[in-house]
Image (cartoon, rainbow, N blue to C red; front, side):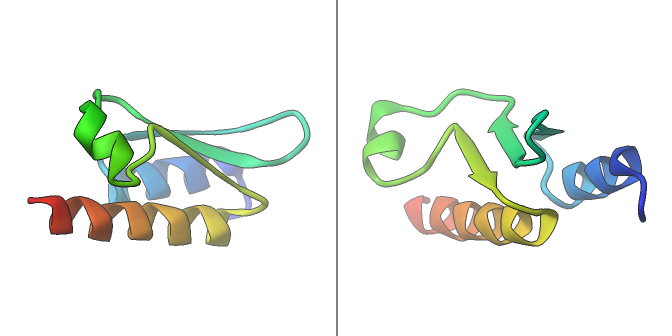
Amino acid sequence: MGDFEDLKAAIQEEYPGWQVWRSDAGRYYATRSGDLSDAQLQAGLAMTVAADDSVGLRRLLLDQTRQEREER
């Protein structure tokens, strides 16, 4: 998957509810497509996460998914 669009699609399929993009500087970002409550934000869930590469972004999204499950 050398093409960013393929990589983006794979990450978004793996983590539904997140929109992925890459900045002009090459950093990877993901933003939730829904809102979080104040309590969720205070518990450490994030609306947007950023990483230097796709591996780091996936790691952050996995952390967010785990944390969200603990909130339930």
